[in-house]
Structures are given as C-alpha cells and as structure tokens.
Length: 508
Image (cartoon, helix red, strand yellow):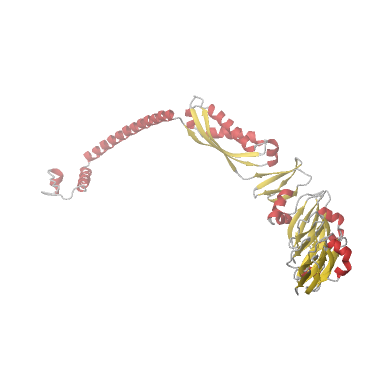
C-alpha cells in the first residue's frame, strides 16, 4: 500500500510511522509504502509550533528539530521576548515554546529577572501600543517624577520617559508625583528619609523640627505649608523653609500675620489650626491670658500667637459709650398701683481688667443691678409722686448704680426712665381727674374774663357820657362794622339823621 503526501509551499510536515517521529518534511510530494505512515502539517504563517509530545521529541531528536525550530525555554528566573515578523510574544518563566524557522523571521531575547526587571529602551519603543502578558508599562510626563516600587519596596526614581518592567512573580508599580506641586504627598516619607538618602539629597529638601520649633515653607515667595513642632516633611528642591524658635516668644510679627491669614485656603485653614488669632477693632482693647494667667493688654489691630505648648485666651472690650435697655419691668408703686416701666442706661468700661476679674458677665450684672435699683426707686413712691417728679427715679437709680459699678471699673454716665405705662382702669380714672381739673380751670378763667369785660364796658360808658365826640366815634365804629357785612346801604336824609333819627338799610 502506497501513501502519497503533499506539503504546500507555506507548510511544513512531520512524518510519523506508528506514532514514531521520522523526520521533518519540506514543501513537496512524498510517497511511502505501508499503511502506518502519517504526516502532520503546520501552517508557517502561524510561526509558533503546537507540537504534541514536544518534550519527548526534543529529548530524542533535538539536534534534527533545532535545524527547523527556534526553541525558547525559560528558567524560573528568566523571561523572553519573541519577535515573529512584526508580532511580539512574551514567554514567562518556566515555559517551553517553539517557533518554525525560515518562513517568517523569528528572534528570541532572554532576560534575567534576578538582575533587572526593566526592559531596555529599544524594546520599550518597539512594544509601544502592544499589550503583552507579564509586562507593565509606565509613561512618565515631563512634569512628573516616577517612583519605582517592587513588592511595595522603593527601588529608584524614574525621570521623564517610557518604561516597561517584567511583572511576573513580583508586583511592580510606579507612583508618579507632580513636580508642579512644591509640597506633594510623598509615599512613605519616613521610609524615603531613613533608607533612601541618595534620592532625598538629589530631589528633596528635608525639614526636621525640634519640640520648640515651627517652620513656614514658601515657594516663589508664597506660603505653601506650616509645620508644627517635631514634624518631618519632604519638599521638592527650590522650596524655602523658615524655622522659627517659639520657646521664648510665640507672638507673630504683623507682616507674618497678614501673610498667613491672606494666603491660600489650605494655608488659612492651617493658620486657624496652628494659631490663636485675635483682632481688636478701633476704640476697643484686648486682654491676653496665657495658661489662664493675665499677661498684657492688646491695642487695636491683628494679633496672633503659635498655639503649641500653651493655652491662649483673649477677650476684647468695647471702650465706647454703650446703651443697655431694661424693658417691660412690672413693679407696684407704694400705693399698690401696678406699673410697667422701660429704663435706658448709658455706660462705658474704664478698666477692662478689673471688670473681667470681678465679673463673669458684665451685661448681666448691670441688667440685674438696674432692675434692683428701679424696683427700689418705684416701690418707695406713690403714683402721684412718681408722675409729679419722674426725674427723682432717675436720680435715685443713678446714685445706686454708680456706687455698684465703681469698684469694677465701669462708669455709668446716664440713667433715664423712658416710659411709665399705667393699667387701663387707672388711665380712665386719671383722664377723668384731668378732665375735671381742666373744666374747673376753664370755668374760673371764663368768670374772670366776664368780670373784666363788664368792668371795661362800664369804664367806656363813663367816658362816652362825659365826651360826645367819643360817643360819635363809637357810633361810626359800629356803623363801619355793619357796613362790612352788607353789599348796599341806602341813606335817606343827611348823615346826621343816620346817627340821630333813622337808619334805613336795604339788603339786596
């Protein structure tokens, strides 16, 4: 029995007899006698050879197979890159892979993973855009610095460029840090400082503070960070660090206060965490306490102190004239008339320290004392006395409150009752009393005026009786007043007849 086998130009075959390897068959026609011959063909357009029992064939026929196959066998600490024409393949450790030679160019490159996980730059460029098993790629921008970590342990820094690393049995990662931020969060800063001094010296500024020191970091003239005592921090090189000793004087100069309070939001937030701020307006004064002990008075302006290691307290007092209202006070007068009064007092603080040390609540103290003084002044007088002399209440309260506040450095300048509000029935009674008094006064005045008028008329009559000319003038005056009230007068006879005999008036 003859068997015919045809191998195409783009194929290669392996000849077997009873499953035993005989030889490699190149493209062409082959004739063999016997029924146990068989040929397995492989498409050379697929360079990788998927051959059964490959390990056995290589052990028994390795020399012959190596003429036709590129054998890639990696050890436990090796990896390989295989280029088949324009295609790249990765071979991981402890693998065996073979590729047909001749039809498509095949090359293999081996890498020792014990010595270096990084791929050379020429391979990184050729593998751009290709995803391969076991390889990680990391691009580093021009404004970044990369930190290479293997198994979470820092290895080295990576400058701008493209990088690729074998990541097979070990985790490989790159953490990028922006160079545009002068105070980035370096990963594991303490480890970098302690174990990688070369990296720190090359790229960073290190700040290490003692227990009585604070630091202000500036970049391009702007505050970027405030560091508390005993802190340690990394910055990019180019950052200026000012270390301040706060052991003797923790107060900040005015220029530094403005710089910290008006900076970025992060700096302002840090300022509120690290500083005790106090702003004293004009016409005010502040009191400063350190560890609950009074230290000094503060003039108007902005003041700030470092918080660390001390307890700070400030209180601001207004030195200007102030007004306190005591409203809606219901009090019984001496004659048991219920009254509601509103009181206003003007005061100023002369000695804030005495007021602070002597009183826990200045406003509440003044309010209560004014209440007591008002109740005492009103309760000692009847309603009539209160209404006749309201100033007596003011004087009584003024004398009382001045004595009470003098010992606390507070001066009361004025006290005045604004309103005395009577109950409705009392208002009605007082209205009637006032109405009766006014009516009596009006009646007296009316009688007085009538008497005076009668006396005047009597005197006038006596004058006219003795003087005809005066009588004649009076008559003309009466006639003038009458003429003002009519439109037309008809006179019959002479003017004398008007005055002595008859006056006839026709009113149209």
